[in-house]
Image (tube, rainbow, N blue to C red; front, side, top):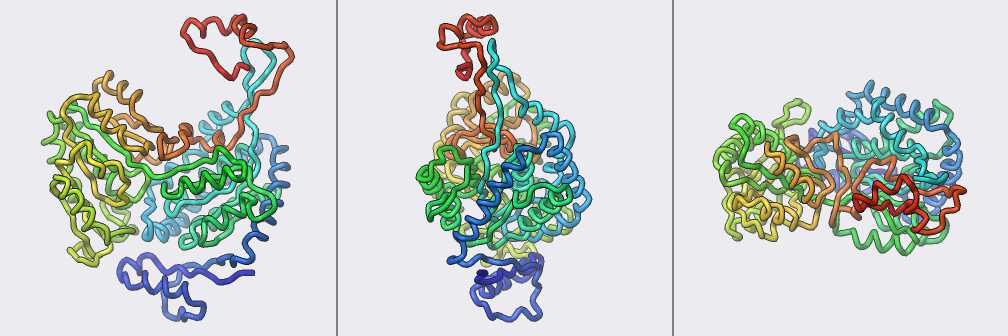
Length: 529
């Protein structure tokens, strides 16, 4: 039973006439609203509450059968299928660009990620993953470490970045032999549904098992999660991928543990930071300012990996900030169809900007650039749906405001005291740790930052918003301390298949010749057992 269909209006029309956002909401609350003359771009079915558990259980049972069949498909064949999929994605670049624009205007998933994701379909990437997935012989015995599929994975997709995130999850799940059940965002399912349809067509062409990838569109995350976890009766998924807001972290973990899943794959928000050291040349400072401005204003700052905090050494503070203020002022509202890197998309929370500005200024900071709402024409407008690129300077490094994710193109800047240890301590005080960036030439400074920053990824003298990295794991409250974020590996279980050497205890292990060099460095591989 399908209760209703969701209607999505054209994104370009909505930013030019913001009243269409309200009209779209009205249309989707009423089943009999006329669509005549409206810029409708897509519709999809919403599953009724009373049919949800039955549908999920049916999808789950079919997926369990499919994943067993998939395990018998050689890895080499799976790679060929994914290469075919990647070729089709490239050939239809214009299609995915058009669909992503529709999603972008609502939550601003930036198009720069499209090319970066397609890199994962290159041969050298498959060679790397294939080597990792091969069984590894253990030291001094016939035991081996294997990566095996987990089974059926439930995926609660983010409300932005559907193309880059879901493409990589589909890629990794199929490569590692898993089936997927996907819940796209019910208001923005356009990209996810099209992507799954395209992938399933490729699987059909290759005569792969049916029902490896299914979708269910429903507005309530928890209802779907309860059905996936078998909490309403029936079978359960083997693991969960949740990409979303940290406010649901405890609830997600508790539900998973209730169902016997103790290591869900969770990616939550980030409050990513960057540090600029004093040894950059004027040319390097200029380039750094360009990269920092892009990392903050691309997608209007509405990525988990957008730059959220900046720390600058006092010796280069003035030249760096002079360049950064200029770069911030280049960004303006407009159409993403213009292919202009300086065009902003609308904000999902422009109404919160006044309170954000008040909070920083009350804490002693100064708004040196921006701080206003803008309309589509780039003019100040108290009801505008755009946020003017905003810089807060003079921010106290111990401020609690630096520990919160602000999903907008506003950037607080800290002028450090020049002590690297203090700077690292302040950067690490935030509970969220997706990635951090360091701009420096001193190798010792780079190494110190690389080893001590409590993040999943460190970017060195590069673009903090480099999508080719995606989210390479995270630490602290951002994840469950999963640091790899190579989906084919993350969606696998590591198991040791015991050999026949009869090793029984640690004393025996310590006599293995291959282990002795490790002991000299006080390193013992615990999984030798």
